[in-house]
Picture: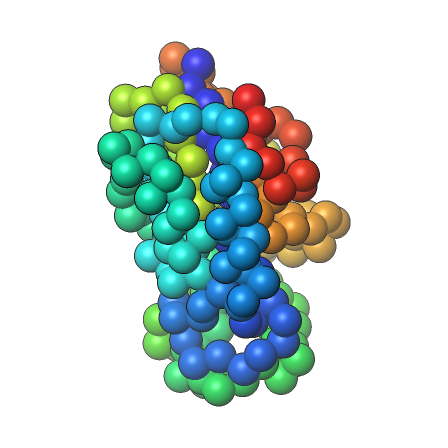
Length: 211
C-alpha cells in the first residue's frame, strides 16, 4: 500500500483578499511563508517522493521540504488548482470582484464550457484528476507528499465517487466543494493499493504530517 499525503498550500495573497494577476503566479503571504516553514520543521514523516503543483504558492509551500529532504526525488506534475475563469478577464481582481463570474460559471452547469484563455472546463479538470491518480499508481514509491490546492484535492475525492463529468456531476461537485473546507497546510492522507485503487482518509489540520 502506498501512502500519499495531499497537502494544501500555505496562505496566499488571494486567500487574504488581495488582488492578483494570474492564478499561476499568486505568491504566499508572509504568514503563509511561515506556515510552510513550520510545517516542514514539524514533519515527522520522511517521503521518498515529493510532487508539487506548477503554481507559485504550491512551489513556495514545497520549498522548505525540498531543502529538508534534499536527497528525495521531487517532480512538478499538473496538480494545480482548477482555473475555470478566463485569466485575462480576472487579471487585477480580487475574490469579491470575481464572485459574480464564479456564480455564473457554476450556475451554467456545462461541463464542456471554457470561459476563455487558460481556463479549464469542468470535464477537463475531472480528467486531469483521474490521470493523476493513474500516474501515481504507476510510479514507484512508498510515501509521497503532494503540494497542491483545495479544489484539486476535492476533485481527486470526487472522481472516486463519480466518474462521469456531466451537468449533474458538476452541480454535485459544487455542493461537495462547499460542504467542507480544507485549511491552508492541512493534509489529507490517501492510500493506493496494489491494484491502483485510491482510498481517502481523514483530513489533518493540526499543521503536522503524521503517519
